[in-house]
Image (cartoon, rainbow, N blue to C red; front, side, top):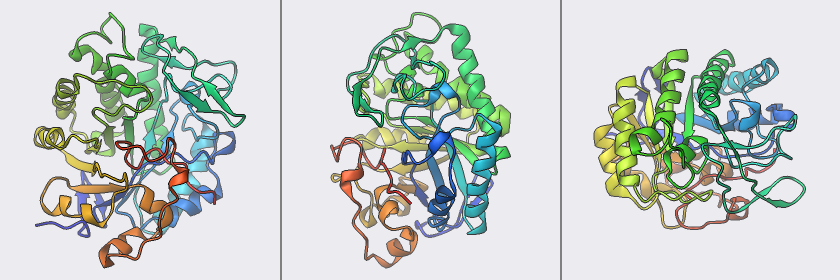
Length: 356
């Protein structure tokens, strides 16, 4: 029987334990550049077996929120090198989460007159905080077939940039209503070409992004995060029981390092995907209060997951693995920092981290 505090070989990346720091949006990157405070923030949490960063846009148009960082310029690569050096110097391992926000954004957040894009011209319900107040989401520009392929290439280029910046690998953000998830969902993807319609077409974009990034940097450095049945950012997935097994079957031949499930109240589906997927499973488990803690450690011991992702507790407890091992005490996370509050189902992510 394994425990969360034992080392783990993640497709060749040696982790000191099976406790993962979940990705959490920070909006602390002025000019899309991480700062020395970013390096300090992640280095403080280097006792995690693995850190997955805040979402990092793979292209300028992929930005969804104010002051989020990118990995599409030489300047950004150099700035991230300071962060990865700090984490490695503290003994940690760190993956960059590549997140294209797709239709979740606003022209006022984007540079050079860019406009949010998506699989289809379907405006999401809801509003976005832009720094100047709350605004309605606009209707996105539908990506052409050529633009879809160019976006796949953007992810591959960002993956290469991540390795150049010193990251141990990348996580593709296919969850929480952002671009990969938008292609998976029938309510945001109304296309009738090879990228939309039946399940095998709606999963194609996520599969091709996974394939392109695996070819760019090696499959052992690539993970994929999903959130089946998550309604966040106006997603509706009535057929998630068909979509996600098909997606896992399609990516299995690629040999990705891990699948990261941001679980809703869907444990039977989690167990099915665990059985289908040939790589490691990182689980951000569904919890009634939306915060993963000591009570979930048994999920490693009973084999439900290979590693557990913790979000909110890592904000308030940078030394979280040691506190989990001793059963506490824990500083309570400030729930007011959650985007959207603590509504059931939106486990641990996204979170606006405290300023440093």
